[in-house]
Length: 105
Image: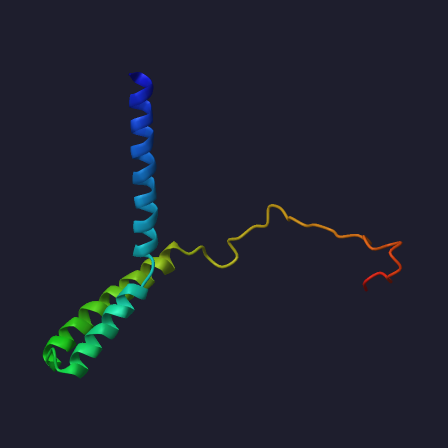
């Protein structure tokens, strides 16, 4: 019974972690807000909403976009804050030596 409980809790935790990752990614992306602004513009062009309704929605959406961009700017590391701790490299030698082809230069 304890094993089943641990599996259940582990599965729920995995799902919640994935949901958190998706929510954080969406919170730092303003593309859905830009799409919403474009949709409002299309509704205005089609006569589905008035100029006043569009202006109100535009203010709300642009404020939300500014918040997302400011939050992203705050989360970004300061210039020069990066430090190289390692380098991954691979080398391809003269694998065609002896094949009659000249080596690459």
